[in-house]
Image (cartoon, rainbow, N blue to C red):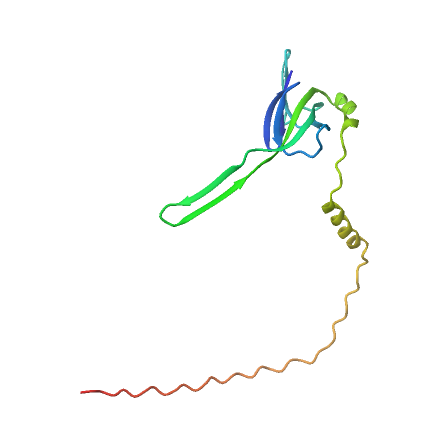
Amino acid sequence: MFAVVKTGAKQYKVAAGDVIKVEKLDGDAGATITLDHILMVGNDKGVEVGTPTVSGTVVTAEILEQARAAKIIIFKKKRRQNYRRKNGHRQELTVLRILEIGPKTAAKKAAPKKVAAKPTAEKAVAEKIAAPKAEAAPKKAAAKKATAPKKAATPKKTAAKKPAAKKTEEK
């Protein structure tokens, strides 16, 4: 039995026991996750293609490790313009072992093994910032004080121009 799974904007053809590298997914090594965006399922009876996904089917996988891919060098150059830019990038990956492909009921049995994501410091700070905003009562609009009308601006006088220097002719 095989399935075509979409994760991280890419599609992977997987079968039970396969080890695949996908874009980073949340979870620690040893945790079990379910991939529910199944595009196609095939077995010896035939193939079922989803529109756009196959409902009622999930792929259960175990996270083996969180890794990083090899560094990719990005080099830009415009000839004869003295323009060169060098940059690098390492993609974060999650290595998965596919445990089973089956109906959603099988995935619910494996769900208790899933490790809850640990709250990060950034999330805690965001919650603290958001809480006072929700509790703050709406303030009354302060009445504007009546102010005296502004005086009309007096036009500025331009500086007098210097007379042009007299030309002298030499013979």
